[in-house]
Image 1 (cartoon, one colour):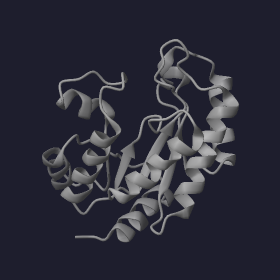
Image 2 (cartoon, helix red, strand yellow):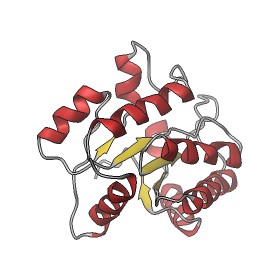
Image 3 (cartoon, rainbow, N blue to C red):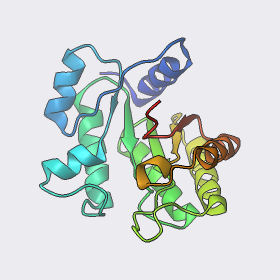
Image 4 (cartoon, rainbow, N blue to C red):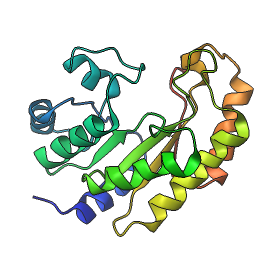
Length: 191
């Protein structure tokens, strides 16, 4: 079985090589092993898959932070593949509290993870720009402080939450990059 440091190096190499790679979403150890047997090079946890496997709805904070972290541990231990974690909004609004989820996920064995600018609050679905950037910066600081490298993905969630403002989405991604994110992602881009 690969060490966490070896998984981290393999995950970074996947991001640095030319072209794209496919990273499927297991929701438990069994699906992780199945996907690994099919030849995938990395795995990513899924908030939707975990919520559904527990008979719950995704995006309503019905899955606890401890359940997410346990799912990270189970999937990371299931195969020798690097695992990236869907860490939602870090289960906190305040930047340092949200960034702590990075440390906890790394302790659970994952080598990458995402932090979203979505609040989980339907009345105000996206964090204000300055707070969103501060949250990514705090997460990047935690990721850089770890003994095993951790690849941080910053997600701009506008398009998933009805804010079809591509200029703001791009502005957020550019600010997240300056704040220290390794990977930038805007889910919901259709063309």
